[in-house]
Length: 527
Image (cartoon, rainbow, N blue to C red; front, side):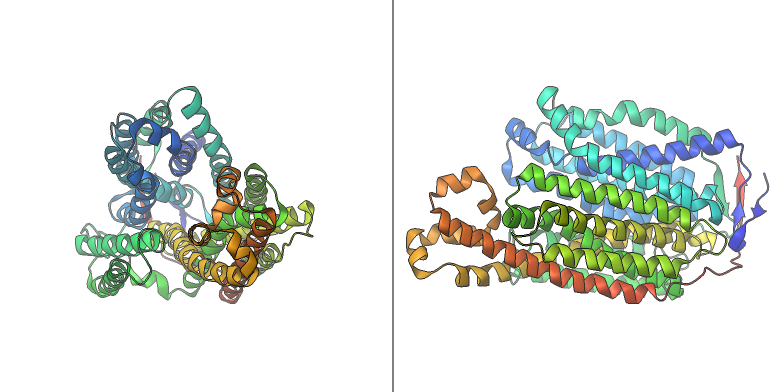
C-alpha cells in the first residue's frame, strides 16, 4: 500500500472503501461509548449511593473518570504518534471494557471510584484516537464531513446518556450502566484490531518520555483536584487548595523544562509555535469555559428568573446541544474545501458565542421562553462552529508525526479550560450572591429567617430551587422571591464576566489562516 499526496502535503492512505467505512464506524462507536461513560452516571448516582452507601465518595465516582481521562487524552494522543495508533486504540478499548466490568461488580463506593478512574484511562484514549482516526483515513478536504459525523455522536451521547442512566437504574439495575459497555465494546475491540490500518511516521521516534508523562499527570491531577475541591470541601484560601495549586503550577513549569530537552517529548513544544495551532487552542480553551458555564449556570438562572422547573431548564440545554451539533455539521461541511476559510468561520462563531452568553446573562423575569431559548441556541451555534473550526484547522496544519498530540490537545484544552473557567466563575458567583443577599434581604425579612437558614442558602443557593427543601425552611414567599432575585442577579453578573472572557476568543480567531501547503507529513501504511 503506497501513500498518495493529498492537499496540504498530507498523504491519503489507499484503503478499500469497505475497510475505511468499518474503521470509521469503529472510531465513531468508540467516541460514543467514551462520551456516554462520562455522562450516563450522573442520573444513576442516587441509586448507586442507595445501594452501596458511602455518600462521602459520591462525587468521586464522576470526578475520577473526568480526571483520569483528562490526563490520558494528551498522553494517548502522543503515544499513538510514536508507537502507532492501532496499538494504543486497542489497549484503550481493552482497559475501558475491563474497568467497566469492574465498575459493575463493585461492592463499595471506594471500589467503584477506583474502577471509574481506570475506566477514564481507557475512555481518554478512545476520545483522543477516535478523533485522530479522521486524519489517518481522510485527506484534508474530506475531514470536515467526517467530523460532522463525530459531532452527531457527541450530541446523541449528551441527549441519551441521562435518560438511559435513569432508565437502567430504575428498571433493571445501576450495574447495567456499566455492563452495557461489554456487548457493545467487545465487537468494537475486535473490529479495531482487525480493520484499523497500521500507519506510522517515517521517523524512528521510539523512545517514550516517561518523565514528561509523570510531570503532565501530576500537573493536571493537582490543578484539577484543587479546582474540584475549592469552595466545596475546602476554602479557596485553605492550605490544601493553595498547596495543590502551587504544586500543580510547579509541575507545569517542570513539564515545559522537561519537554524542551526530551528527545521524543510527550507534549512537543513545537506545535505551539504554529500560529494556527496556538490560536485554535486559545479559542477552544475559552469556548470550554462557555460550555461548562452554560451547563451549570443556565438551569440556575432560568429557574430563578423565569420560574421554570428543573425539567424545563434541562430542555434549554437540549436546545443548546442540538444547535451545537447542527452548527458543527454545517461548519465542517463549509470548511471541507481546498482553501478553507478558518478565520471567517472562527471569527463568526466566537462572536456568536460571546453574544449568546451575554444574551443569556440579561434574561430577566420579563423575558419570554422564546427569547431564552433563542439565546441558548445562539451559544450552541457559536460553540459548534468553534469546535469544528479548531479541529480541522489543527489537523490540517501540523505535520503527520504530530497530528495525534495536536488533535488530543484540542480536547485537553477544552476540558481544562472548562474546569478552570467553571471554578473561577463559581467563585465569582458565590461572592456576587452573598453581596446581592445583603442588599435584597431587609432587616425585617432577616428576622423571619434564622441566621442558620440564611447561611445555608448563602453556601448553597440551589436550595432555593428545590421545592422540598424550600418547604422545609418555612420561609415566607416575599423573602424567597427576594432571595431568588438575588440569585438570578448574581448568575447574570457571572455570565456577563463569562461573555467578556469568551469575547477574547474573537481576537484569537483573527490569527487563524490557511494551513501550510507543504508539510512533509509522510506516513508508511501497512495492512
